[in-house]
Length: 221
Image 1: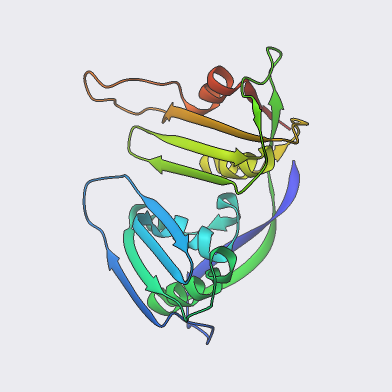
Image 2 (image 1 turned 180 degrees about the vertical axis):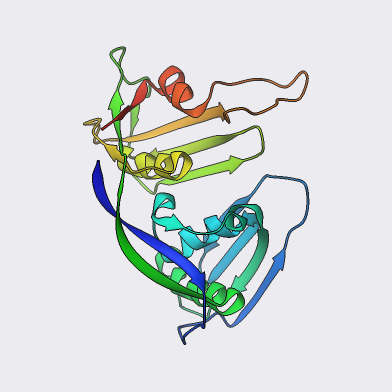
């Protein structure tokens, strides 16, 4: 067990923060569970994103650090937002996204320390199955749906992959692989207790998929 900071978001009044020039935030009631979140210079776009995932992105925390009501995961939203010219991208846009969510949902943060079980990401005895590539601009893009999900990593390192895994398993994942390079790889997995459509291609659950497809394993610590 290790101690991590848990952020609890509760309904309350907002406070003034840097804001988008223009923003649209709408509930998405479609039965489709596919979602996406993208940033580019001075812009943020989210499609069918659960509010929980939007809060994780905006507050730049891990999924396991967010505690809140169940509807955070069930309510989904579309966002199209434009920042002031020259704001930039990625981390420079997150304070603006925080302001948008705080104002629309009347949120405030409360921090406390909790103990959570952790996982260690390690290489299996059969070895890592992905070849190292030249370092460069990295990305990890994933899609999620009711039955499972897919991930495509380009020039990604294991620390970033461990962070992605922590969101999926909702527990801290520490990179102890010893792998220091950059890697391109794809991962396909099913969710536990999912009901696949007849004729659909099936994949193992995430913990087994990383073993079979990547040669990595999650150990409890």
